[in-house]
Length: 231
Length: 240
Image (cartoon, rainbow over all chains, first blue to last red; front, side, top):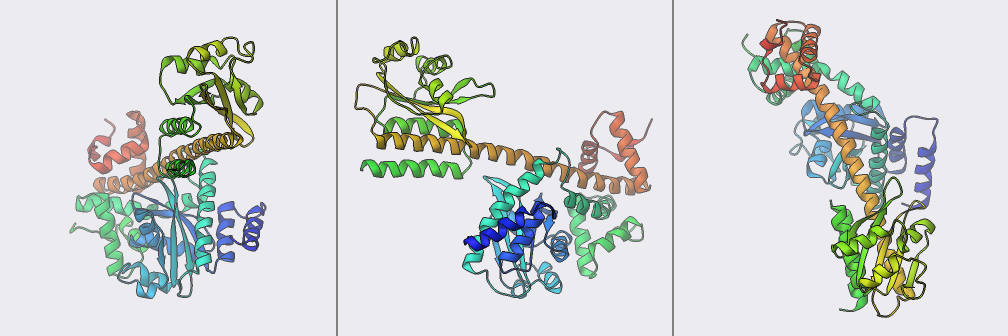
């Protein structure tokens, strides 16, 4: 990383009076790389679990999409253990038939996701978003990889600072927020006499086919205004 | 192959193991073997200080009991102890020259056929965490260049240990986080499943799960998982 960039990153990280350090790193990514958004997410059991830090709310929305739709670059990067670089989502409908159009609608045109790993341990994914199409410049790509290593260490620090069984603050909020979806999943599993994995697929499919958010469908299921069986 | 080609090969070999998942004892044993080879020594070993500052042998080029005892002995006296205490390298120490320096270690090492010893410090963030112990016969003394190679190998050993510690920590922290996420999701799903099966409200379902867990002395997340996987039936949750 060139000295000017490195200085800028360290200045931004050193500002202890501001937001939490991982969030500061997201801000630093946006500032020094030519991207418009950045976020660190945790993937578990192949599912998007939530973002630990984002540079702005739109990144949070893009992350939520990947949970709602069950597909996206974060999930793929985690699954393949290698970077997923998509310079133009308008050309990625084949790869992400649900995520690509939805992300475009949020104003995201390019996405670059980097798995955060220590040895064989997958800690999460760093995603960079941009509102215009185009590849990452070679020096930005190189610096993104360097910053992903920093993100790995900071994520470990965040996790080390909380007691076992606890969740980092933003992640805990996301999980809370999604509880209605998980409750609905359990209800659907009972209604269809199937497992929760299948129930989640059915819930997502219903939301997608009816052009509705998974949250609103889940709320209806939990409110007992919508059933997935003939009961 | 030339000496320097072999040297490069060894460094690449050791660096590669640092990148992939590796076994620290295997790594340090390989390191001890390479020390012997590159420095044309007789035997080598790695000793590390535990939390109480007791030096323990963790790897050796040879597993013979007498050699291992020689490492152990160095908790009272010997080149490793001196090196550990001072953080300075000990090079080309002849076992004949100062017999009173190590009154027990010296003769014992001599009995095993060694005539010269070296100890190179392993430092981590300014602290000495252990030493690489090298035993030689009646060959040539180690040159400056040889010592540098030996120290480089000791430094690689230190990096390897730090890496292993980070890896272990990452594994533990990640498992804890994933477990916390999985159980929170499972509890919400179990609430929904129970609420549907028994046609009750979410809060009531949660109360039922919690009281069953308490009565049967189980963790809430385990009860939730059991319900989701079908090993626990919704009927069993009632208070009899």
